[in-house]
Image 1 (tube, helix red, strand yellow):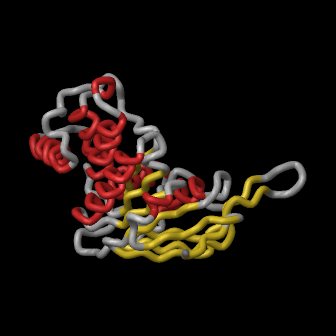
Image 2: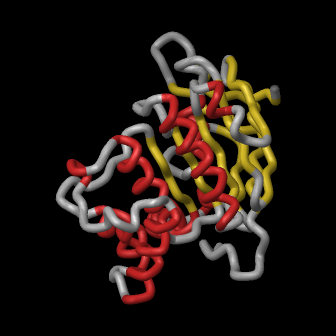
Image 3: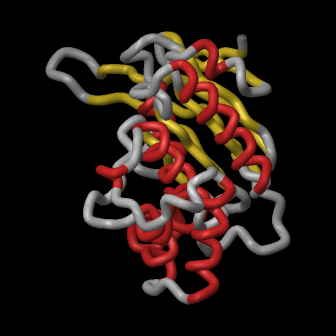
Amino acid sequence: MSGDLGATSTPRLVVSGLAKEYPTPAEPLIVLQDVSLEMSAGDSLAVVGPSGSGKSTLLNILGTLDRPTRGTVRIGDVDPFALPEKKLAEFRSRHVGFIFQEHHLLPQCTALENVLLPAIAAEKKADAAAVQRALDLLQRVGLENRQSHFPSELSGGERQRVAVARAMMNQPPLLLADEPTGNLDAANSVAIGKLLAEAASQINAILIVVTHNADLADTFAKRFAMSEGRLNPI
């Protein structure tokens, strides 16, 4: 099966009967059970819930960083877990963008170089077109004058903006954000929430944000609550 969504396909995310369990000496630890979800290009939603409810596990499975115990995930026409490991890594690099609470910027790289990383991973080089795209993304997130700065020279909000630009570099059909404002103050949290929604809209991506922040959750059109491994609309 190919890992290419196809240039003319409309990205969709279809999750059916997803479950995740971990073996223990007594009985399996159930983290997710019977999670189903459908989203189309341009859709956005927030997932809220207490720590340990399975939010991050769900995000890791949707981003193909972890495998489900049962159930299926389809991104476009592709079942990523049916791909060989090398093809799965390539698929993830091209089709999934991640934004984490810890921005995970490389400290030895400038803002521009950090944004370019997904292109280098996918294409093994950064040509002139990739560099221009990275510069355009930094402009979109308001950091066109900070492209040569290192992460240590940027504020927390600026570092997270670089992380958003990096996630958009390959124009992935699926954007996943795990507590993206957990280390930011209220003003920066609102700004990043709006930026995420705008960024996803610009590239017509599916956006899923996991958060404890009710104000951030209210930024998005749909909201779901994760409780005891189940996902329910709120």
